[in-house]
Image (cartoon, rainbow, N blue to C red; front, side, top):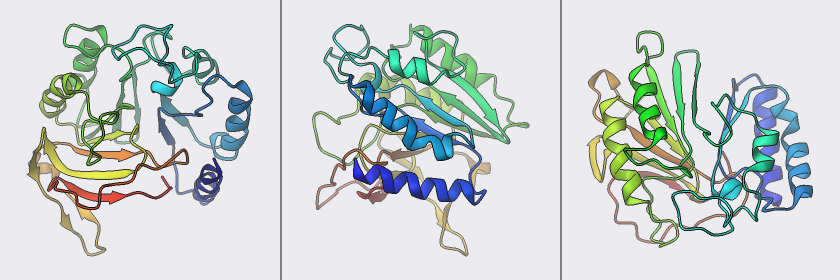
Length: 259
């Protein structure tokens, strides 16, 4: 997509200016949907920055969702039959094994818990039990910030059946995020940018204040709930917001290409 080229140029400029320590791409990777030449083009496209800083990612529906792979959603062909094979071949993240693509890393003062929203996240699942163990093990004196990542979202102002959050995933994940005092949730799937207040289910638990530079900030010494941010506007298509959004928890909405 033409927009992805301009986004890559902007990211490369940031990396070359030494403003970036790592890049996270949480699903919706190449949108090749079975055409390997598109993977070749995508890998060539990201090379200017992926060759210089860690390029960390997670699997999404366009990498694995197919009639040939059983997962927690209705079976269809979002991945064009790729079954995750090109993704796992090109991007070898520190997972236990390919069919268990959830893992965590630490960079500086941040612990990142990265899950697969395409696999079972029910309370009896292996992934959910891993999530409990991983987040409970975080040493907050060493890594005081805890960021949770997965492709699919829990909140959006888009009123669409296709983009409606999975209620089972929301009901399983949100209490776990709150119990472990997750600071920030970063997701994709919806093709725009949207940021919430510090939210639990649909209730704002805290609102940010503006610092001297006009930046929204929270005092997490008085933790209330995680902030959720959808960052899905890197170049594929854009999902437009309705003209009138009746959602007090949505503090920022941008339907433009970027990162």
